[in-house]
Structure formats: structure tokens, C-alpha cells
Length: 171
Image 1 (cartoon, rainbow, N blue to C red):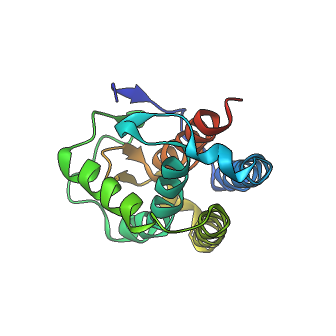
Image 2 (cartoon, rainbow, N blue to C red):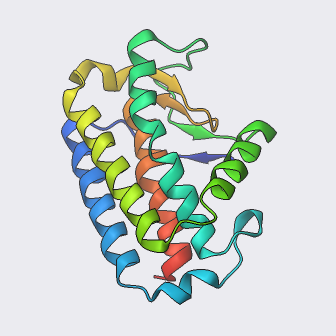
């Protein structure tokens, strides 16, 4: 993925609203699709729509851990003034993503959607429980996104998910 820039810093309440709206929209759109349509298409890494859904459901659990990591501070912090960026993912994250998708090869579409929904609820709960100040702390995600916690969460949990939902649904 080429280097990209996320939107400017968000408040906790703005981020929370985006997570809630984006998660609800993703679930609504994906649950409306016929299950057999998830076997079609080829996207990044050669994945079909079902595998992209497996990717989304598997990575959603990482976002509360990113919030926990921000409490301890990142090992290498970017400038808080810099917008969130994402460079090409490193080989280890691509390998991790492939392993997580493979682990879910036998999940039904319903199980994948339920996992995403459960994990999104945990992400939202973690945001609700976190202090406002935490969202201005600089972080770096395992996938390479860096910026303030609010910017990175917006990028990975809102924009990234919306991009893949569009890949799957075509809309």
C-alpha cells in the first residue's frame, strides 16, 4: 500500500461516533449480501471477499490493545504534530494477516460477522473507558500506521474497514 495520510486529530467523542457509525454501516451492508457472493472477487493478497471479511474480523481485536499500548507509550513516538501515515506494510504483518485469514478458513460468513461485531463492541468499550488525553498520544500500529492514537484508530478501524467493505460490496 502506498504511503497514505489520515485525517487530522479527532476528539474522543468524534472518534467514538465514527467507530459506532462505521461498524454499524459495515455490519448492515455485509449482512445484506448473499453468502455465496463472498466467494467471488480477488483483492489484495489474492483474497476473495470472504477472506477480506476474515481479515477485518481478525484485526478488529487489536484495536483495544493499541489503546492499552498508548497508556504505556510507544517505543518510538512520531511527532504529535505529524498526521497519521501508513507506509507499505512490513513482511511480518502481511504474514500475520495471512495466518489470521487462514485460521478462519472454516468460519461461516455469519461467524465472521459475529466476530467482527463482538470485536468492534470491545473497541468501542475501550475507547469509552479511555481518558480523553490518551487520544493525543503518539502511537504506531503493528501495521505501520503512526500518529496520535485518535488518528491511527481512525485510519485503521474506520477508514481501513470502510475501504474493505467497499471492496466487498462494491458500494
